[in-house]
Length: 246
Length: 254
Image (cartoon, rainbow over all chains, first blue to last red):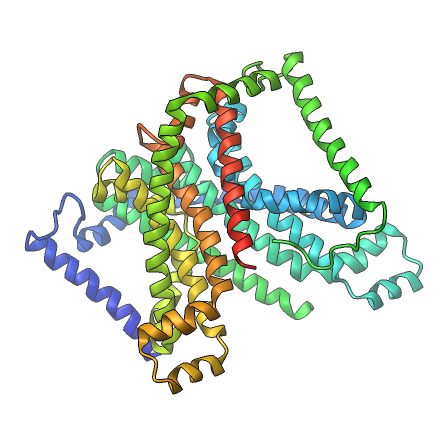
């Protein structure tokens, strides 16, 4: 607890120091705005720039990407599980895809899908897909043999075996992948919004920066950081809730 | 990222896998070519394979490409050195000291998953519109995975090794160079690998947003003049370089 308070106190002290240095003219106020101005800009961003509506827009894109990730990621993972040959042929490709800088091809997505929310969602989806596939596969492969035998003893057919035994058993691991995929998707979605100047929170930062509204830009960045922290914490909480099912 | 329990290869299996791989690649390329020739989509969006191949050839023969590659490689290289070194130092400090870790490590975990590109307007203010702001983007991107990995790696070091170092009265710098860095080679390489990946992305994205040189700016210029074959060629080169570097660094781990 003492350590936590110290950490926060150091951050506050650094902000106070920066404020002092700017007021003393040692840091250029046109480069770094006063921390007090940044704080004061937050209500303005909320009211005038409709930050909550923008947050909603970004979240809509994240939810759309999440739905695609759940459907295609889990299906592909299950397909790899069903076909060991396909798995051996493609698993390392999915690994390489995870390492590939997907977001760099955003101009390509712009050409295909136009400057629209679809481009943003598709990039988020493409960036988040590999961990969902690989973790789904990992979860299914790790299903305990005894559970599969129980299913067989009840004469479950293939579909029932998958829905009643394999999927529930693999769910905690699948969620680990889904969470990773969602985080990748969100990072890319906000990033592309900024880059193509379209959509929710990312666009807001771009607009404020282009207007040279420095306190607003810093305030909006703070808001995005806060959003990612909350998003990160919420998925972590969900993951912990799922864990006892193991 | 590989999943557990890779199926055991059976005799003749490798051949079937190879056949399937070749079949998939041929099918994808064939489908691409059919779409390109048929005109279902705008022809320029899906250029024919020969057009992409020709553009790739032209790109690799173009001195401007190597100049831009040099600019980007320099920016990424400097970013990895600065981001990696500071990340390592901060990670070791946090991993070695419980109090510092409790006080500050949560900030690393909070800032780690935020999209770093949003800091670009700030970096432009601080370091200008030239290479400085791109290097800064790479540094910010690279720092977090390296620091988080190094902090976690420090805590996994076998206590016996640390006690041996202390019993020899090793100084802090000797502890770092003789014990810590050796004992956490794997997490450090993993962190650097992740850091390099995000540094490449951070630097190149910054170049696409605002730059006159570098591969990122070449991509966005190709997009602006709608030279699709050149854009595909650049994307292929970038992917090969990024994945290749990643694999190379992965080998170091062993």
